[in-house]
Image (cartoon, rainbow, N blue to C red):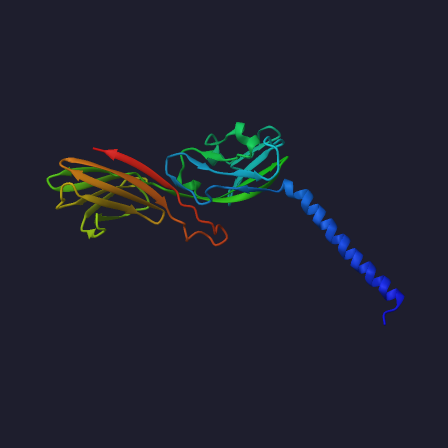
Amino acid sequence: MATFGQIIFASMITLIVIFSALIILILALSLSGTLSEVISTNTLPVANLGEDQLLSCFLSTKGQPAGLTDVAVTWEKTGLTGLVYRYQNGALDLADQNSQFKGRTQLFLDALTTGNASLLLRGVARSDEGEYTCSISSSGGGGKVNIYLRTAAFSAPTFKFTNGTLAAEASRWFPKPNVTWSNYDRLILPGNTSFTSNSAGIFSVVSTLQSINVSDTYTCRMENDLVTGISTVTVAGTDVSGNTYFTYSAASSLPTSTYLSLTTSVLYIYYVT
């Protein structure tokens, strides 16, 4: 039979456990309205060389008013000396900006109070490829997100139909793509493809398909490890019409420390000749 002292001791332990649980619950409830995280709508973007690329970065807050204050944003690139971009204390702070990014980066300052810290990178070059970190702090919380930028060159082909031959010409591809033709029934057709590269290593592509049936629909697929361009082409007399869309790979060859998420983007281009 337990002694009076043992009963008192057990009761005190029970009360301590109960009060601890209540304190944890109260703290959790009080903080639940201020949870925040930094997210990106695309952590594996593929930039078209020479064109501008948006690196998305947003502060997602729970239970916070619409307008954030005291917003500070820092963009960094792994392995780079200096910063990509910084905004703090209500002004730009580019004193430590790496020369690679001078005059090529921009935040949308009017959007910072909504948590939008996306970075516009102008005229993407191969040297821009790599891992970026977007860090945000504000009255509504903060955090960081990693984004791995990949670079490629790709363009939609133009099509011509002459003397029973359908030709596809694309001016910019890198890495070098594979080209495949197929008919409406997805049967692979024998095409003839040639490549020419310029001093920057960018390939122009010319691919032809013979023995075309007028009024039939064909598919021309240009793809490398990063980008796939799929063109659906209809031949009607001497006219060619169709559309092209691009998809981007999940980049399974990225460093294992980078990303497990997968994002695929699609761009449609319509043409009539």
